[in-house]
Length: 349
Ligand SMILES: Cc1cc2nc3c(=O)[nH]c(=O)nc-3n(C[C@H](O)[C@H](O)[C@H](O)COP(=O)(O)OP(=O)(O)OC[C@H]3O[C@@H](n4cnc5c(N)ncnc54)[C@H](O)[C@@H]3O)c2cc1C
Ligand code: FES
Image 1 (cartoon, protein in one colour):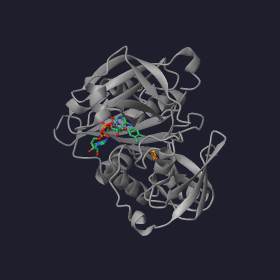
Image 2: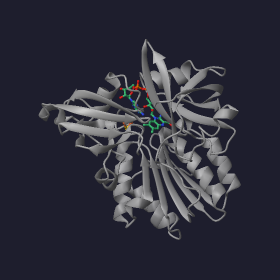
Image 3: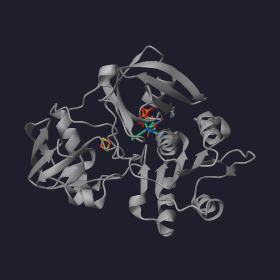
C-alpha cells in the first residue's frame, strides 16, 4: 500500500536563489517508520488542480538527526519544485511516504576511501552519505567532486565547508564550475579528466572502495565508463538519477493482445484484464489498486514487484541489475505484460 503520513514543515530555508532546504518534524510514534539509511529519499504527494502528483526528494540530513531535511531545486515550470520554493512555509504539512531507495551507504560495512561525484541537487543524498561515512569510520577518507554552474548556485556549500573544517585530514572537496572560475575550484564539468585528475593525481595514494554518483544521466554514464575502464568493479559503484531521457516505447507498438493480471499487494490478490499495450502500473492504478509508485519514469525504485508467473518486458530500467531481472524483479511503471497470464507480487521484493 502507498502509505502517506502528514509531516509538519518546521523550516523552509533558502539555499541558493533557486533551491530550498525543507525540514520536517517526525512525530515520536513515527520515528521507526521514518528511520532511513543515508542516501534514501522521501516521496511526497500533493493535490494540484484536482489531481494527485508524487515526487521523490532525497534526504540531506543524516540518519538519527532529530528532523528530516530534503532540498528542492526549482526546475522551469516544475509543479512540485515551484510549490516548494515559492509557496511552502513553516507550519504547513507535507504528505510523505516512508524513506525508500537503494542508493545507500551501509555504515556497518567498513570503508577505507569513498569517492562521491555530485552535480546540482545531486548533492542532497551525497551530503547525507558523506556525513555518515565520516562519522562511521575514524579512518575513512572521503573525496567529493561537486559540479555546479557557479558558486552562487552551489547548494549546501556552508555545510560542506563545515565538514571540511571538522574533518580536515579526511575530507577533500573539489568544486567544479561550468560558468565561472573561482580560485581553488576547477573549471568545466565533471568528466573523465576530472576523475583522472582526482584518482590518478591528487589522491593517487588512496584506493577507493566505494563510489557514489548523483547527477545528470550524461555525467553518470561517463563517470561509470571511466571508472570501469580504470578497473573498478561494477558492484563498487552506486548511482542515483533524478530524471532520465525519454525513451520511445517500441514495445507498445508491437504488442497487440490482452493479459490476465494477478496482483498481490498487502497480502490481497486482485485480478484484472489489461491491454498488453498498457504499462502494468497504469493498469493497476486504473483498477484503483493502491500500489506504490513515485517517479513513473523508471528512475526511482518505488514500484518494484516480483513476477511470480508469466512474462513482462521493461521499456527502460536504470535500477535493477541483470541478476535481479533474472530473479523476476520488474519496475512496474516500465513493464508491459508479454504473456497471456502475468502474476506479480509487490510484497515479495
Ligand atoms: C530518487 C529521486 C530523488 C530525487 N531527489 C531530488 C532532490 O533531492 N532534489 C531535487 O531538487 N530533486 C530531486 N528529484 C527530482 C524530483 O523528484 C522532481 O522530478 C523535480 O523536482 C521536478 O519536479 P517538478 O514537479 O517540479 O517538475 P515537473 O512538473 O515534473 O516537470 C516540469 C518540467 O521539468 C522537467 N524536469 C523534471 N525534472 C527535472 C530535473 N530534475 N531537471 C531538469 N528538468 C526536469 C520535466 O521534463 C518537465 O518538462 C529526485 C528524483 C528521484 C527519482
Ligand atoms: S515509479 Fe519510479 S521507477 Fe517506477
